[in-house]
Amino acid sequence: MAVRLFIGNLPYDTTDAELRAHLTTVAAPSEVVLPIDRETGRPRGFAFVEFIERPVAEEVIRRFNAQPFKGRNLAVSEARAREDRPAGFRPSVPFRPAGASAEGSAPSSGDRPARNFGPPAPRRQKGTSRRPTKMEARPRGPIRERNTGRVFDVDDGEGEVEAFDDFATSVSSPEEDEQE
Image (cartoon, rainbow, N blue to C red; front, side, top):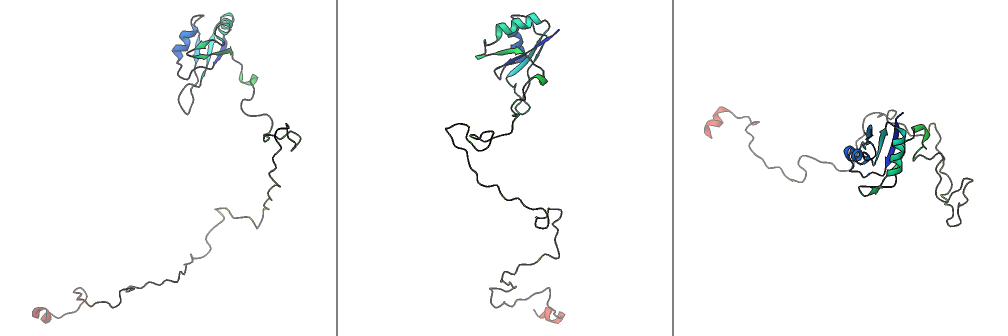
């Protein structure tokens, strides 16, 4: 039956071929998997290696655990199924601020007192006093104009308008055109 090993603390620039060549001193692995980070595209610093025989896998653990590889000490152990592992970084207990104990606001150690953030904020009541959502808020009636007190006119600030000949709108007889 095949045995899968977890190899941790790998340098991030490790390749599949380098790891395979390093482990081949004991026996050639049947499979080497280097998980890749989705965001960076680089290896994540660990690998899964599968050996066909259990005695060979145990020899790899004995020989390579805590031994240097490219400047870092490897962590080699038998891989566990997901169900057997702890939850990871998600705590199984609810979050408590530093210094708070499970009973309440008493400090967990004599060094630091518990923090007091004051009374809880008042809750808003649901009903008529709540703000309408975007879908509920619709314009009611025409948009009002603001009266700023300033009135603008065509000849503001120019004083008297100069007279000029406007050929497009002036009415002239053909006789006047000949005299000019």
